[in-house]
Amino acid sequence: MNIKKAFAAAIATVSIFSLAACGGSNTATGTTDTKADKGLDVMGQTIKYDPNHLVNDGKPINLEYWSWGSKGSDPVYDMIDAYQKIYPNVKIKTVNVSWDDYWTKLPLALKGKNGPAIFNIHNSYDALIRPYAADYDIDKADLEADYTTASVHEDENGKVKYIDSVINTGNIYYNKKLWAEAGLTDADIPTTWDEFIKVAQKLTKTDGGKMTQAGFNFNGDAYSAIYQGLNYQKGELLFSEDGTKANYDNDVTAENMQFLKDLYDKYKVGSNDFGNDYTQSFGNGQSAMIYAWGHMEGTLKEKYPDIEYGIFATPTFTKDTPFAYDRYNGESTPGVNGNQTKEQQAVAQDFIKFILANDDYIRDAVKYLNSFPAKSSLQEDKDILAQPVMAAIQPRVDRLIWPGPAPATVETSGKTAFENVFQNGMSIAEALKTAQNQMDTDMKSSNFKSMESKYAYYDEHK
Image 1 (cartoon, one colour):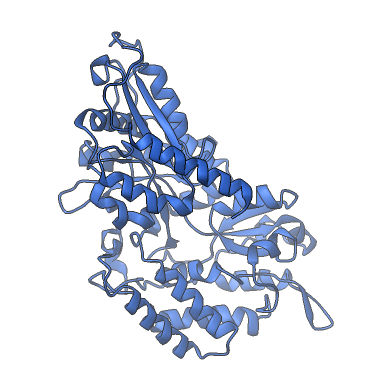
Image 2 (cartoon, helix red, strand yellow; image 1 turned 30 degrees about the vertical axis):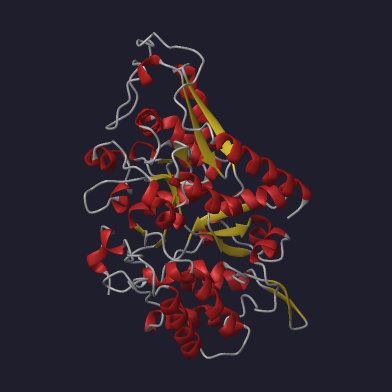
């Protein structure tokens, strides 16, 4: 950890423990709000929010919102500002905690009575925060009407503790300069993997048998994401029928591992020796195409601002509509602390309805997180679709599948299998068997259950 990070962590730690002592207090002093009629319009489509009311009966109240993000990366910050302007009696203090510390300190704070009333959620830590999160006080039918992926977050009683604000998936990023140099145009953008191979070969350069430019590079972490999408394209689930066990060691995974290996060994469009970081290679202009999710745009903007790139949807094996084009994952809406006082929970629930009805929240999430709106009313918005990632996702959004907050072993053990095959000379069969055994071990005591069965086209799987 560098000095700046260490200093920030220290400040965050001091803030957490000093503020926790008073975070649950309802004896706040400050402005009293007596004006119920704010003169503001009702917002929302199905979930509606009428701001013309008093919050906490107009009495001053202080809450906390915890997040690993900050203003400009977490859209909730802007919504807090907007909410406080409408309700001057409400003060929501934001507490920033580094990602590494967040998932240790947040559960400890939520166990007590003085933890944050509202907190940021990442669905990969669902099991950790679920015991402390209150159910949203919003009708199930209203959530489903406004948010296309809401149903996958419902429990057996139709209740949710958070939903997706925006979603993302993988696409192909290509270097426009290298594309043009190869004589390629927009008409050459491939839609099938066979077409992709031909394009990748045109984008590959060698000098004396040594590769100097990769047509396609998936070295590093890319395999652990792309293999899931390839399996889904062929109708293979990531988990067993009962949703409790990983489904990795199977014929489809083997076929797709061989397909990827052929890209390097048979079609010569990339190389295992061509660096171990596909992001850096693409950013340095050495790889013409990569598979990546929406976060790649932020990385390129920050680290490689001179690269001019385009984006197109990941190819499929045939021109027919597949079972699913790929996996998606969502950025979660905030949680409400079920251990806070009824007064703080009431304000927190009001705030949740305010942001879910508010299109500005989703527009901010699209902008800050470079992800596609889960809110149905914005999925054909012209301004949003002007962005390349959004335009690539939009035609496919109903054919993307979420497996649930999958255990990390699904990716980490998959990556190990890739390394064993591509770097260590292990056979595909042995690598898949080894990875499956590791996944089984890691998930043995897990309460995870896949959400694949909630996918609209689930009955089409193999």
